[in-house]
Image (cartoon, rainbow over all chains, first blue to last red; front, top):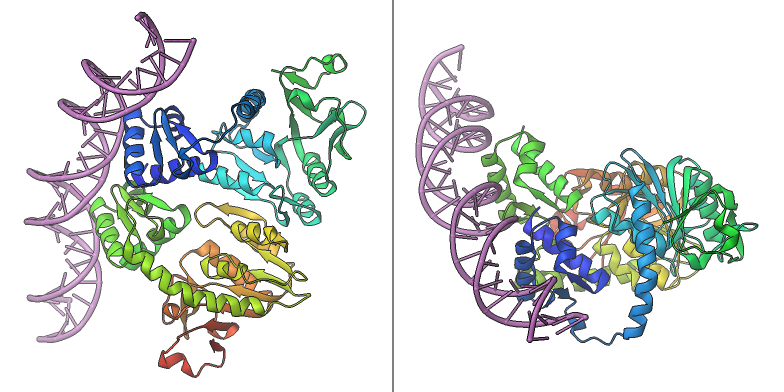
Length: 247
Length: 247
DNA sequence: CATATTCGGTCAAAGTCAATCATTTTCATT
DNA sequence: AATGAAAATGATTGACTTTGACCGAATATG
């Protein structure tokens, strides 16, 4: 990999996350500690980031105004999501034709997707951007662009989906209920989820334990139609379900 | 293989991937290290790419040191681009169904687009994002996502375009020539430009004066097929053309 | 205060570079 | 066709750059 390429990737990761450790960069860029250190020193000298003990942070964000408690709470949820995402990403095999739904839960998958022999389709432009940066082959759905969630939704997207037949699909959800299935608050998003799930041979719903026994406005798929990947799910009612993978 | 052919291929690969190593090029073009080095040196001298240790990167993506001259040139062009963009944006009327091409020139339009009664379609996700933030109704093309330019390109996008009939379209270009028409360095991008122009009732090409009498690898439309919006165009040969709007 | 991690400098190995030169190809002129 | 000048190519070389490992010093952590 070219030096400049590494520089670009380091800056890209940094812009996205705000901070990065040397260890993370070693893993992400697949290079030695020495090289990462040299890169950080160079980029710091160039004024493109601020080197700190252990890694680097964004130039302007040298001061930390971040509430410790908020971080901690976020971290707890994060851990569960990371475990789920890691497992899910591992399911992607060479030759797979994969749909990745928009959403924060599926976003965690991106870091763990290593399979370059698969073709990925998504309706989330941030996902597409990051996957493409990693060197994955990415297709994006056409259709109406929704500003808030930065996802493609609506009729046009559904129509595009019509012709795809995915081997695997990964989805987020707002609610899981045995009677009401998987549900989400937004109709036009639900339409896309529904159609894409119909066109996947294997469907996986990624959900932390807080999503169980929740019901949102629109159901996009029945409970049995997907394998649920979760952690720490202790609720009685779901214990005996065949399609729950409690990691 | 012809020297010019190699040049075109190198630039094309670079356009697509953003960076390339000497080793990659040796394999791809099936030629010696010496030749590749000479090519890169020539293209660098020509200002068509930036040579770095190990290979080359896109001209604008130079990370190591910021070139004052480049910034200055960009600023000079900026003023012209603003004028052109402002005029072009004013052409969008209520009820229009508008295509906006990816590229820096068209990006300037976004700030000036005030018409909320029009539907906008684009293949650039950055444009889509910014337009949606402004509250415009935006559709995005489906298809393969190209990391470097952050645009949707290729077959799938062309197919999606097939069914649209735009009232107006706004395009960027790398070269304008009376004989060779409008041209751009990347084939897959050219395919999208070509198809979208075919499906517009009125086509506008936005171009600062530097684009005239330039020819890039792939022509995507004949010279007469669009109205050219420009400023400061003083070249004799183009003075009498009916389809040039010299602001 | 003890322990673990991170840091920056040094070194050898690997990779990359520009220059040189012999060979091949191209092409206008005979 | 034959000739020779000019251009392009590929191999070689020594100089230079980048890389990853190592290690003692510096810094964070409990």
